[in-house]
Length: 182
Image (cartoon, rainbow, N blue to C red; front, side, top):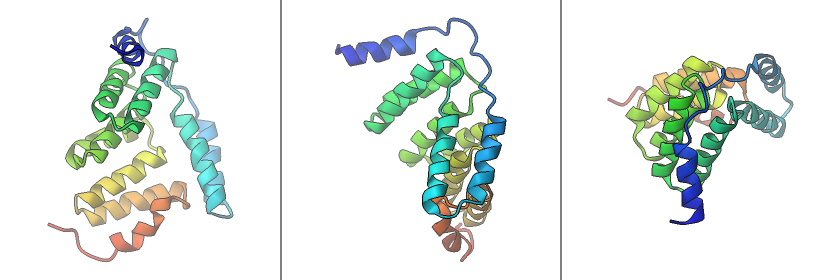
């Protein structure tokens, strides 16, 4: 077993020393970033604000949760979706109130084109963090992939209300020109 694989196994096997603490409360910071995004002068400014939002969502409740999140993201970036999902499953089991674990599991399902499994994960993320712009946009893309254009357009509009500079904004005219596929 390689050192990297051993380290990954240890991260997954390490029990939470106690219960996962509550996710950090970044409501004020997120409010400020959303307000700035709504009035951003251009796409570059809007994308910079989206990056700052990601920094907030990616702040796990404690070191163990952060290790699980970072490990899962690293695995996902290496296209090792199975190992990434194991890390995100462990994260959700340890920190069930932390939205990003669900968002990342939804993203893995989306990447695997298992759109039906992605939706409940994205819903769980949004239940925990309704202003998670990326989860909302991900839900729009998932609904679009399922041929549910009207629902996708509603979700995308909701995401664009929080950040009108999302790259997905260009899909709105496509979603609004036609019936849902049956």
